[in-house]
Length: 501
Image (cartoon, rainbow, N blue to C red; front, side, top):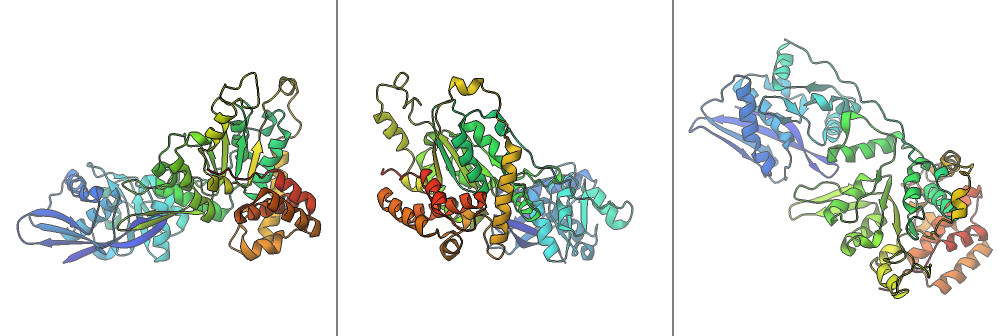
């Protein structure tokens, strides 16, 4: 007799169906797991053996063979523990195999038979719902699985599951976790002076544009970047589910609580390529995917390794990250808003003759050359942030804060939602090709100015496209139907030619 239990293998944000087949064969006692599993899957034998012993049961003196089908699909993770254990119990006659056929099973086992949390339960729940199956998962993740809407058995240990199936103690249905409200972050009232920078931040938020701030230390670059989540609109239900799926795979979705807050990730400049774009021995989403539909803030941009920065080129262009392996390609979403900050040179005081180092201006050229031209070309807004003067610091806090700016941003985002309702884009920053030409072609004076500036600044085709996107956002903030000369002029003021490296 072969007992079968359904589970899944994760490839990025895709859950692939896996059948756990358990067979007891006469012969020398042994416990074998086959089917292209990683080290964590191989170690499942000892966790399952310990959990069954903790319940007072003994393994039969037979050859135990566990096959994870399909055999050519890579399997990673400890969530195979529980389906293997239940399949073995079904083969031993402890639980009914027919009952298990109605469920998809995920969960890690402790040696005392408790069911521990494992990453990816939300993906498994959605996959089970698509197949018309219930889900058996750890009790700690029942609230997460309940968002899929199907029957969920969230058990604290294997014995509770056995008692449920035998009718001795029924498990209650978990409720979906509470949706967390959006977090505001610092208020823009804390930023004194820097009116041009705050205007650029508003444009970036309204259109989802990438922004680079260049200025001396203490000019408020990091503070303004941290204010950005407070002026962005909260995630809608579909976006919240996308963000939560990435968090579930990464194992950071705590308590099954979906959030309306847009992610804000600020990795240190010592981050490796795998940490930033994803990868590792067991492929995990990187910072650019954990910031999906939110903000990725890179402070001290030139201090990152150049190869690490250049690995962001493809995600910024396509909105996805593809991690290639010999036996599989894993794709994660990465539609982020990049906010970067840097000093103009290593000493940071290029424009101040009293504080600048003796190598100026050569040190500035060498320092800024650490960031490649193609990466700079993918940044829509380039902003020079001056030092804050003492006169600005003694002034009272500005009357306009994040609440007022967020209202204008929400209005502009609402216009874009209606504009792109029939297209697979959300913001002006994602518009491209014929769609961008349709919605962002300037009037005749604006077109003439753009043509003149393109020739003078020697803009690339990508730079030309990004100016159109920014101009469309500026027009949306102004409530204008068509992009005009003033909108193009302001968009050009935030653009600089990428340096030749």
